[in-house]
Amino acid sequence: MSKICVIGSSSMDLVVTSKKRPKAGETVLGDSFQTVPGGKGANQAVAAARLGAEVYMVGCVGDDHYGKAILDNLKANGVLTDYVEPVTGTESGTAHIVLADGDNSIIVVKGANDHVTPDYVKRALPAVQQADIVLIQQEIPEDTVDYVSGLCKSFSTPLLLNPAPARPLSPETIENAAYMTPNEHEASILFQGLSREEALKRFPGKLFITEGKNGVRYHNGTEERLIPSFPVEPVDTTGAGDTFNAGFAVALSEGKDIEAALRFANRAASLSVLQFGAQGGMPKRAEVERALS
Ligand code: RIB
Image (cartoon, rainbow, N blue to C red):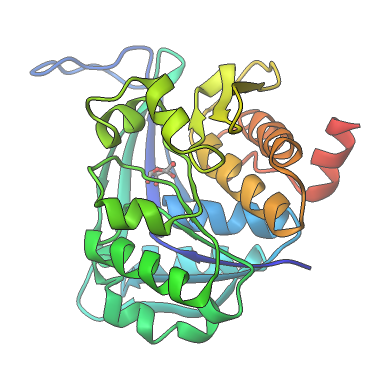
């Protein structure tokens, strides 16, 4: 069983479905409201656990009822939560999601996720040290991402950096990451001044640009490759990127080559969008294998 350590956010998603997305200054009537577990870190941890990895989550929740629900949900999905702590006097992270016109828009309020500092990660070193691969995203403090990239380099542990939400990164952090998985928008912020082709060519086997229903693009050192995704009719695309990242990490940590790992991740992501909620459709390992065969 491969060992994965996820360092990142765990939040509650407050999801409104609506026929119309309101413009600035406009009020519209929505259709439904639901509260479901989310946060890019927790989503990736749950997806990796369902795909068969042993997963440690390193994160923080608030000392509120959302915090308890987030923790219970991680445990129910088999994620190891020894390094997920409630922060006294702080609210849990929340994501305010509007599902309209077949797509989502999200405002994240970090809350307790801002307490996932470099010092906090130092307390979770055993989880980082024992991992075959570490997964990190950017809903936690920026200096934590930089710190973890250096830590992984010093342990020679591959780091999969999912740079979402996007921000410019230092050349050192980019250098330290083994794999990076921005979507097209995030890649344009990360590699300002470079075309997509130039960026991919500069980071062969390291940079993987996800293109939603098109698939994922990378450069193999000789040529640019597009690994297509699997066509489906999505119900809710929230969490598809997280499932992709988890699937990619699980497959790589099991020794699959890059294209086999990308196909596995694409298949997992395509199944994840068939149900409501970031984690609602995240598949179990057997479902992905059945779909691939
Ligand atoms: O990647 C999807 C996630 O982003 C949602 O679950 C929400 O929590 C936001 O952080």
